[in-house]
Amino acid sequence: MKLADKTANELQELLHSKELTIAELTEATFKRIKELDPKVDAFLALNEEQATKQAAEMDQTDATERGPLYGLPIGVKDNIVTEGLETTASSLILKGFNPIYNATVVDKLREAGMVIVGKLNMDEFAMGSSNENSYYKNTKNPWNLETVPGGSSGGSAAAVAAGEVPFTLGSDTGGSIRQPAAFCGVVGMKPTYGRVSRFGLIAYASSFDQIGPITRTVKDNALLLNAISGHDEKDSTSANVEVPDFTAALTGDIEGLRIGVPKEYFAEGVSEASKQAVKDALKVLEEKGATWEEISLPHSKYALSTYYILASSEASSNLSRFDGIRYGYRTEKAGSLLEFYMNTRSEGFGDEVKRRIMLGTYALSSGYYDAYYKKAQKVRTLIKQDFDKAFENFDVIVGPTTPTPAFKIGEIIDDPLTMYANDILTIPVNLAGVPAISVPCGFDNGLPLGLQIIGNYFDEETVYRVADAFEQATEFHKETPQTWEGAAQ
Amino acid sequence: MAKMTKEEVIEVAHLARLAITDEEAVHFADQLEAITNAMELLNELDTENVEPTTHVLPLVNVMREDKSIEGLPRELVMKNVKEHEGGQVRVPTILD
Image (cartoon, rainbow over all chains, first blue to last red; front, side):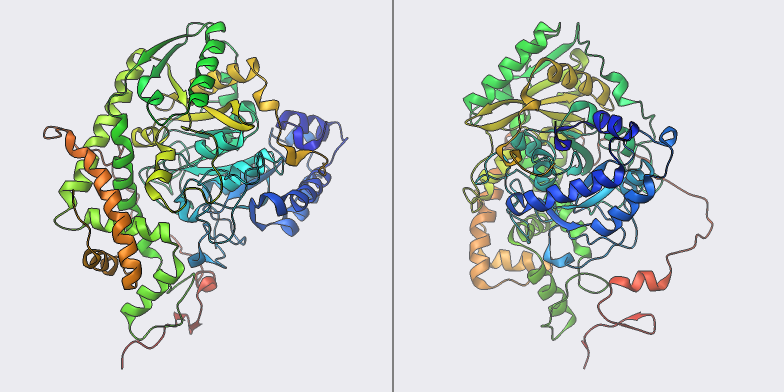
């Protein structure tokens, strides 16, 4: 078995028995990235020099002082700031930006002893569902290099799927962890809003953004969420709630679990293959003692419009900070201060970012505020209430993560509305703020499909328990894409 | 169905401090019109008596003790500034 196929536990066993050193593991990781990434294009900046130095030092630490993630490599989405390591959010406007502090999650990774190997490509400012909105490169789906990896955390999902790195962090505003996880056949968790500090996450839509782990297995995912969770005084929206050991929830026991299956998640536009994969998954969960019932989340069809009004409005405000003065891209053509701002921003931002800034500016402008912004905030209440009601009677809600598997690069990039519809099954979760995971549950013409498991507020434990029980009963997570074959360890 | 005109897009772009050409304005007008029209789906819902949700968690203002904390060192803060002089950010001349 290659290093790239191993879980955190298996890697720790090798490190503890001294069959492998952290330095060797780090070296092997960079070797594999250098071999595969020219095809996959998941990584932006690499942190080789610092990681190599860190790894050699960490080998000196006694095994008894090491935690379960100590010495293991991780990649970080490029909208999470890393001190001394270029962070661009895949935008020209932040080209060359060298953060002067770490995001809280990055400090937490370091405390856990993880080795940050590099930054991962994404849709610019996390706006997109295909990674085609990156200023720098198109990440490819390791399962079929002509298809997209999903987005916006496409680099994070593709790097894990290709075995370049066993752990990555992504961020999820409307599906940006779960949709690429589904497209790439890996495990992606969006925690409850407030579970993980957003300090140092470059803001897109602050009332939705949430950082979460992407991994090959549910157990590894739970280990990583253990490491990054918790209240942070630097993020006043982070929740001051207890963080349990999420791995303790992985008992395999789902006897008596009540599953709600929303009929709206099987509506028009959802492919037969996606529906069938979920129906098959429900059978697996039933065999393990769970029961399921069809339910209704009646306001689901309004989620997409609600989300794009609110998220774009928040984005138009958040992105006003990019003005070319103190950091980032600066225009060469400016006769006045106004021209300086306008040229800097129109040269530095890509089209999708401009579209959302304009949409948000429009929705917030006087005369339209009540009709769009306030209306959407009210509908958000209705969508949240749908979930509150469902969780009175059910432990989890289950459905497909995406309507279809990965699509071809270039296929829908010129059609924003069709692109937005990719997130139709993930967006309601962000509007409500509840946690949800995507786990591999099948294939359609060789492309992975994802099962979405949604839980109640701060009940990631139940989500993980169900995801793990499903994983234990199936083999989908063991399948690997062809880019793996014959590649370096 | 609301019509989004080129002029409206230019006005919105100006408010958002984005320079756009006439051609781009026409292109964005079509796309933004399609998007805002799709959003009018929300008008089906009667939300007269629904409270807006600004945030999903019951948030309260977070206060801290009123004491000064040391800020970041100036050279660090200046690290990403394109041009600076004497601890100040240098920008192009904008006043005659």
